[in-house]
Length: 357
Image (tube, rainbow, N blue to C red):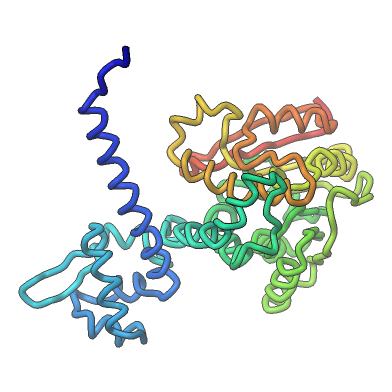
C-alpha cells in the first residue's frame, strides 16, 4: 500500500519551484542590467523615471521600462507610484554595481546566459557522453576574465599571495614565476605590474585568452611578462620556476594528472605551487550545505566537466573537491600540501604545495 503524500511537503516544494523560476528570470535580467550599465546609472541617480534612466544610460526607454518591471517585482529596485520613479537602494547597489567589486554579484549572473547558450549541446552530451568543446561557449573568456578580476585579482596582494609566508618579499626582490591556464591573464598581468623585478611566464591552450592577455600587457606597458599558447600537459620545463600558480584552471584540463606532474617537475627545489580551485568536498552529501552548491554543480556539469570530456579528459568537474585534489597533488610528487580558505571567499580553496615535506 502506497503511503499518503505529505501535502505540506508538496506545497513547500511547489513554492520552491515557483521561487526558482522567478529567480532564474531575475538572474538573466540582472545580467542584462550589468552588461548595459543600468545598475551603475541607477546608483548615481536619485529616484528617477524610466525616461530619465534610459537617457542617462543611452538606451531605449521601452526596454528599460520592461527591465525595471522585472527589477521591481523581483525586489531589486523600489518603485514610487505617485511620481512613477524608480530607486536602487544603496544597500542593493553594494552588490550590483561595478563600484561594488569584488562583491558585484551582477557580473556573476552572466554565467546563466553563457551556460544557457550551450544547453542544446549539453542535452546531446547526456546521450553521447563526449562533452562540449570550449569553442561552443560564447563569451566564456570575457565573462571569466571579469569573474577573475573579482575573485582573484582584487584579492591577490592583500589575501592570496600572503598565504605563502615570505612570498610578497621574494616577488619584490625578483623570482621566476609560471602561471598555468592563465586565460585572459588578468591575475598575471596584475602581479607583473606589482612586482617589476620578477619574471612571469604564462601558458594557456586557448589562443583567444592569450591574445587578450598579450593585449592587456601591451596596454599596461609590461615588459616582464610573456604569454604562450601551450598545453601544460606537454610542457618540458625542469626546476625552472620559484613560484607556479594556477587559478581555477586544473579541474577542467584534459590531462590534469599530467599537468600536475609537469608543474612538480618545473618547480625549483624550494619553490611553491599555489593553486586556487573550487571549494567542493568530493562528496555530494557534504556539499549539500555549500552556499553555492547548486550553482557550482551546474557550472561543472555544463562547462568544467564537459570541456574536459570533449577533449578526451577524465571530466573531473569543478566539484572534484579537496580530497581528490589533495590526492592528485601528492601523486604528482608534492610532499606537502596545505589547504587554506579566506573568510570573504566561500567559493574557493587555496592549495599551497611544496616538493619537500
